[in-house]
Amino acid sequence: MIIKKKAKKTPAVVVDSSKCIGCGLCVKDCVGSCLEIADGKAVFQETRCIGCGHCYAICPQKAIDMPGLDTEGCDDYVPMTDFDSDKLLTAMKSRRTIRQFQDRPVEQEKIDKIIEAGRFCQTAANHQNIAYTILGSKQDEFEAECVKVFRTAVQAGGKFVKAYDGFEIPDDFFFKGAPLVIVVSGSNSNKGLATSYMELMADSLGLGVLISGFAETVIAMNPKVKRMLDLPKKHKVLSVMVIGYPAVEYQRIAPRKQANVRVL
Image (cartoon, rainbow, N blue to C red):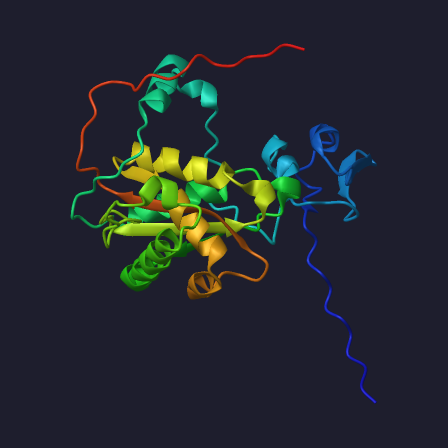
């Protein structure tokens, strides 16, 4: 009888003792108390590690590696203080939801940057269980099914009847002729975070974004539509991002109500 030995699990964190100077910065910043100083060097214990990467990011000697994660480009640290805060705030306030798009494809390198922005958003317990489904060649088919379901719901006196009864629902009602749709999925605890990162990146690339709440609702209410997405197991739709080059140019910031600030 041959007994197969289990392959050793690659540790989440590896400390190069030849580089470590025992400063203790990684120990102090570890959220799971997985590091300690022993004989003047940092030592890793797997116990409660969530793979957050704080130890990797804080080490002044680059003595820490995380073999199971993609560390490419992680040395290019840029603090947010490098950006002018007034200009950044004005740019964020200038963002508009876009519903008119040019008939122009979005370049692959820009799509990659948008997804990369989402990849680095914070997630609950650092689960990083977010997926990005690009509709691609199935976009027209998917929108047609959504429109059919939506029209039926309105005719049946569903939840949308007050807003859309008597209005024409065009074939491009959901995606407005945009060339790119990304469905962001994962757990509800991450709702909005990846989408916000991605939207800001898209805006910085000269693109416009519509977060289609109607599409999210149709996906939630119709199992057939959801199956068309073939989402990872247990994933829920967090947002449907409609992206393209704007066919409209705004001249000023749209006004808002005063902030409702409460101090307890």
